[in-house]
Image (cartoon, rainbow, N blue to C red; front, side, top):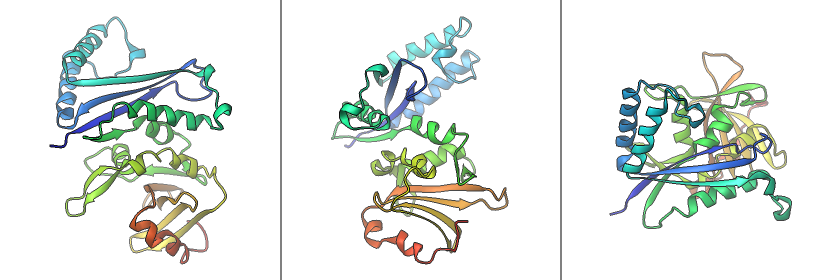
Length: 270
């Protein structure tokens, strides 16, 4: 029987110019079928201690020490695994490897995850640190001066829904079941790079009328990477909804769907 595990990733002091001496990347691994139980148990611990703030080690105080102590005790009795990588930033030598700081950052993420992957099992990797940095906590997340927001969703946090959408793909059309997609997840950091138009060559940026409405496309021809935006309806006219972002491969690549849309583009980006 094929086992599935969830890997939850986060980071601290990882920005290049944040004046911190060390960067830390961490991961927590839980069996997929135990993840909900762990969440319920932790919520019960929070209730017992009347704790409703964000769990954050920099916020530990004498009054909250019993809560954090019980949380640590739970970790050691639960079937959870933890791995972390610490890097002394002053010793990073990007020029020696002809790489950028971002290249180094994602190499470290590879090292964080690679040693915990067993080819016999399946994994859902949640790269929430990248998502929070580039989208959730990015006050300047806009395209050509128009604010970008997640698509509103009933019964689910909009940001959570967007994160899931950007790191998974539909595996069963009938049930709309989604599974982790490595091709999308490893390119999560490409969204901000392209939204901010850091790459100018071989880019197609256009709007097109589709059956469901107008869509704006940001298409990297070299990397076959697509970002789709929708002008927000019934809200401020200077906002977009981020619908999706994905790497073109397989049937999508063969059909060349985006370039076909480009041929019937509108006169200007809407």
